[in-house]
Amino acid sequence: MTEGARKRGRAVGGVSRRTTAWLAWSVCGLILVLIACALVLVFLNRGGVPEVSENLALTMGAVVGGLIASRRPENPVGWFFLGSAGCLALTGVASEYATYGLPAAWVMAWLLSWVWVPGVMLLLCFVPLYFPDGRLVSRRWRWAVGLALWFSATGAVLSALSPGEIQNEGIVNPLGVEPLRRVLDILAPVYGVLYFILLFASAASLVVRYRRSGSAERQQIKWLAFAALAIPLWFLTNAPVQAAAPNVFRVVDALVFSTLIPVASGIAILKYRLYDIDIIINRTLVYGSLTVSLALIYFGGVTLTQALLRTLADQQELPQLVIVASTLVIAALFNPLRRRIQAFIDRRFYRRKYDAAKTLQGFSTKLRDETDLEVLRGDLVEVVRETMQPAHVSLWLRPSSDMGLRRELSR
Image (tube, rainbow, N blue to C red; front, side, top):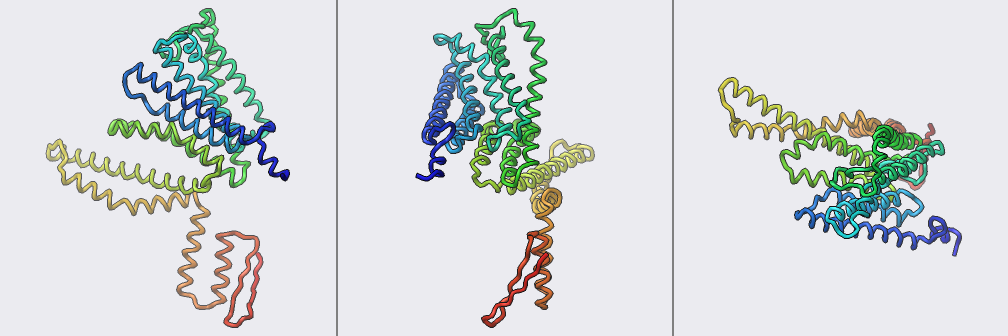
């Protein structure tokens, strides 16, 4: 066996990849069992169909974590996903178990009080700090890891000893220490500030990594940033969807919060269809802007028409003809508006691609009219220089004879 094969057969700490893969999928399977138990207990406690968003998020986190950890065991991000999903799944089981009142419910109530802390910290702080290659940007960022570890440990201990009701679940912490209440009230704002400092530091590390990284790693970071950006955008736009179509809202809400970040992280780390992110971002910008523009035009036109009819004709409801006409106007505006938005986004965000397309379009127009071979040769070389920006350009022209002619142009 060669040295390279031996290295490929080993993972972290001299453990074989087969062992780490078995461990990763075993942990993933255990998490899925915990999620299934939580769903059964939710059904027994409430007598209805459980909400899917949180459980789908944990399932996706566990599966993606198992996939990354089994294929890239040296990368801690996969193990972070597994650890986070495991802690949060145990939190769900503990909550429903204590609510149902099964034997030793007080143990589960105590677990519920603190086990969520490391689960949240692993997902929101450690994943961004080590994404995507499993290493920090530089040694200077060790302070953030140390602070996150200290915050997780002390936060879990203080939560485990916190008196009173746990997370508004109607369950009282059985091991809560009442004399600590005043101390915890004083420390709560301090921990809140530290928490936001850690979140900011984690996000800032991705920005620094993006600026220092090469093209492949930048594409990986784009996947995570694209998924993370969808969450605040969904917060800003979900109210009309919830009012108009509650069932659609629940499905989209579950997909946004449950699948985007784990799936995007898995694609980025495993480098599956990595460079498609630019196309996805481009299409999202175009069709997102197009949808908002058409909605504003439609509702603005309908509102204006209704106000005019109410003022001039004292008519409260819009005629069907006006609604049909508005729909036809939107249909007619779709393609022209899409082309204008696409051109604007290409000019603003994809300038190099836009300039290259314009250069090629100009050359194709000249190619139809120009007959002088020498002029075309110079134009072709110039187009290649502008669009591809190579260090060296060579052009071969083959005449009718067997002897080839090579003409080489250097920058």
